Length: 99
Image (cartoon, rainbow, N blue to C red; front, side, top):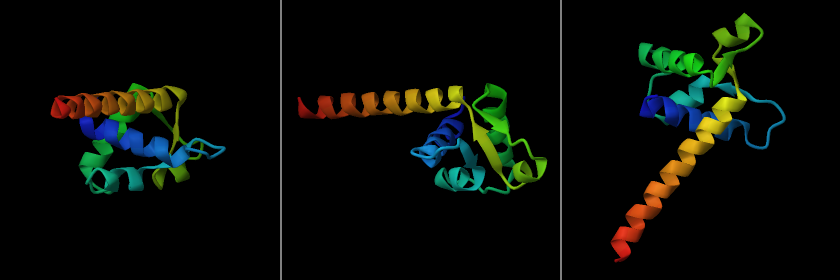
């Protein structure tokens, strides 16, 4: 999984935090990682997340066409794991600076 795809996934996890439904929009996630939401790079990252099973198409094709997807349970877990790994790396770097 690419770093940008993981970063988009973490942003999507933030979109559903405290929400009753697990529907996310790609536009905000793409912008958060510096990717043009309408470009080919974004489409590739979305495909990467779909192939991994981290997001699913909306039941309505017209809504998916507008960039809405469902974040799966495995996507939530992967986003949380990635955030935890990032926090650990940050803590290790900070620990090294304190010595």
